[in-house]
Amino acid sequence: MDWDSETGGGPGMCPGRHFAKQEVLLTMAALLTGFEIGFVEWTNPDASISDRGPLNNETYTGTMPPDRDARIRLKRNA
Image: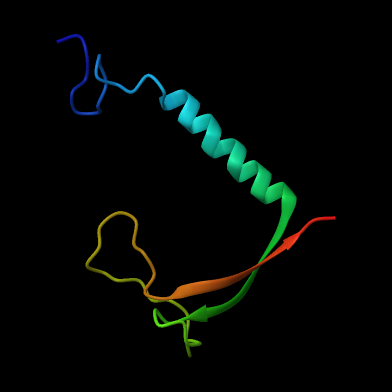
């Protein structure tokens, strides 16, 4: 074969993947330059204020999601 099936390469690769990547990067750049983003507090899944920060769950492999949510403040830059 002339392509790598394990990494998703070859003729089946999405032709719009570069456009989609640019859209994500431009959106993040607009958010990061247009707003001041700040941490407010940790919250429980039911939106009540948490008494502690998040703990890692050792059963996950790779990226471990926190067991708490974070409340943030967005303030538009002048």
